[in-house]
Length: 573
Image (cartoon, rainbow, N blue to C red):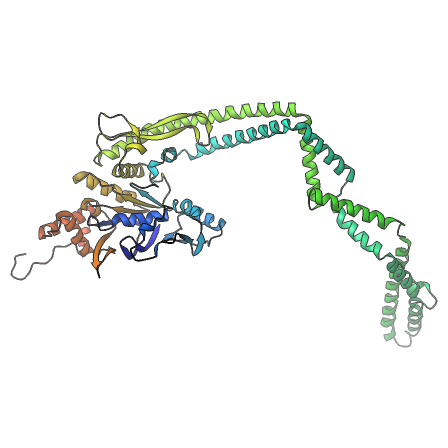
């Protein structure tokens, strides 16, 4: 949801800051007040081209900032985190346009690329009118809308599973064909690598074992001296420590009957004696592990081979062994290329049959849903001053199954009787596009998943009952989400949850555009202006109050500012 919009030095806007809420938000104002300028500013947040002429005269930079609530779009939060931006429940988007051409984009305070902006903000905001990012002017989105209307997500997912399976088999077959073209050269290389690695007979962890062994061999002489000397001093030599401790223990044990306290000390000496005897035995056995003559040269040679293989193939033995397994697999495939290709072709043929069956089932459901969608949209358009409009979904078979099915779909429209339907993106005006999108939003509320919808020119060329119908439908669409609508019609504005007025003023010789949220009393004044023009009378004020009351539903007569003004002294009430 768009929570707050701030615009500075943009066209005739000096400074503008406004907060929007959930539900139906309406923007009104005199012709030329700057409503379209606000839409152009929001367009920058959707990735529109930044032009220097948009900058206010006398300024060097124009800035547009918007604060979005992300609680309803957790997927977008995950995308922001993946791209290294701060993950929080709000997103602050800032676009700076400079005369120098050094334009900048910021996401949550961090500098971003323009290419990162549009894919993110397109998930938050959509403008329906005469704009580049108009969803209905993108035929590739029409099939998406139809699938959403018909709740075909699971059917499409099943189809795409088979599509990915076919793609994988086609890729493997193409790789095999490419490998076959270079088969002999590849066989020679792989055979050499296989022989070299097989002859090396690598073992996991072998390099670490050899390094440890080399360290022992490098210090073999010191180890031999230390162990032999230790054995002699502890046990083997004359007057060894063990012999002396045995004498001490015997003397203490002989005197235990004289003083029992000596018994525990004698046990301690005897325990130390046994421990040292075990140590001495270990040192004696260690001396028996004679280091083989020439073993150090063998270790060095093996380590050199391992280093060479690591440089050539992979940095670790584990990775080299994994590579060796891959080499053997590829060798087997190349050696049996005919059998492998035939097997892959059989798998591909079966996968294609599964894909076509799933695609035909999806296509049948789409064609049935297209009739229901056309009838529903035409029914909605009847109340929107397009009573004779014909709407249809046409399908065009693809030469090969695509990622979204066996066909592409496109919306066609005939706004007037007697005219054949033509591609919607070619013929519909901005107002017609807005009304069609409004109809689609009514019959398929989740058709695009964008939480904030901006309708521009939705009331173009209509009035009376049709205008009231537009207001009712917009309020219905706004239930549970956010809708912003720029309108000239009081019948539409009367249904708003919040009403904003765009004003153009002259101050100090400069023109400024402001956007003000209206109080209930101010709203009555604005509605009266929209009803009666420059001449606001008691009758137009009462008409405005009545229109708001009727649009708001039961209980609206108690709303502040909607009751008639009390009669002046001396006048009858």
